[in-house]
Length: 423
Ligand code: AMP
Ligand code: GLY
Image (cartoon, rainbow, N blue to C red):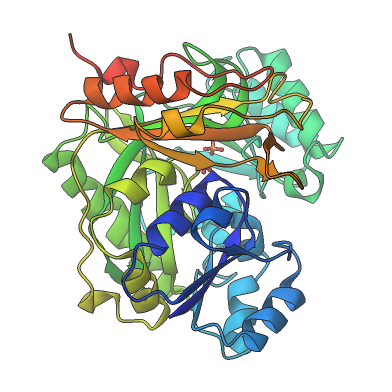
């Protein structure tokens, strides 16, 4: 099969790495890809927002399957457009992707179908929002932009003044453009967080897998939010009972709810959960694989990703076994100095070969120059994904790998998976 994968991050390198292992693949194309995807397939210079270009290319190349990985093109309807052009596609419709594209729509859906989540109220008027805010104890609400905001659309204010600032920033000063023209004020929940993934095709939900990601730049979860600094799995607090609850209270009901709302889901659902004292509750749904979670999910997936994506695209996921390894995995990301603020790029990266002895190196913001040298080209540059008999072993290997890599200004968190290690 000839497959076209859409995207250019670390998630896409991990998916390309896994797709390339399928005995059924004849050609793997990645648009636009990065220096890592170029090692397992052929990069095509088409941007993820160039929907017409992607469709024209897929037709011209007689691609058998397109796999759309990032949120923005999915929410913008790329999967619908590909299917309308007669191209077999893995990824949800824009209607189903509203579970990620509109937090207000997702919240209404969860309320209607009794899927556990934070109690939330929607606002588009800042005065009314601030009035509601003052009726609640300081620090008890979170502010969420309705639409996509590159992972930065949630603010957790500690004081009423900070809450007002966040509300005014989003509603009156368009902090996230159109995406923050409406907001949710949500009850602030507490508890450990997990990212749970399952392939979904209509009402059919595959076996699920749980991981944890790290969003903040600083060790001990301080500082600004990033695209993600690392991940590990399975979580130390995960068990069969919790998994069964998440399936029966969250994953199966959301799949059924989407079918009932004429927005049947086809792709992978990402349930961002908080395990509260009242049980697992949804923080957010996403309509795609997570980054950096995918950099451990692909090594944990024992089944053939190509077979699964093809089955989902043809609405026959129920015939496909999806098997996840329970072996511990850790992924550590190296980022450019200055990230998530502004940062310089174009620095040469060394040590990949030695790092590869300790795990799989997945690229994100990398490129090769005309002489074949590997250079940094983004905030999150690359990471090392390792497994082990214990989470401690997996963690030791991932760090042994990352310590071999160097580029000017390189930074990484030293506490990924630390809390999961029991001495
Ligand atoms: P999101 O972009 O929705 O994943 O939110 C980013 C982060 O904000 C989450 O990973 C949580 O740590 C936090 N967060 C979001 N919503 C809530 C909530 N209702 N209560 C507590 N923390 C939240
Ligand atoms: N890991 C967070 C995300 O992919 O949205």
